[in-house]
Length: 110
Image (cartoon, rainbow, N blue to C red):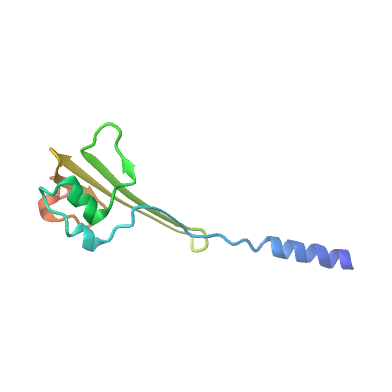
């Protein structure tokens, strides 16, 4: 009887596994995206948004901001992306999962 009770309690406790939510990348808010304007320098953009986590190894004129959130308990996954394009150290356009200011939208975003 004691062995069965011990076995049942081990099985019950082993099924209670705690998992944490995982957040990775740049946490961006729409209010910060709204501050972006054409002709901002790379330093000004970094001041507003922070440095991007992902860098394009082929071009320093493309910055990629990526945020992922994974919750095992709630079965909820979220991915947000923002890509900024520069020319001669000045911001020229942006695209991604945010409301991009009209003067930074590329022709495919319109």
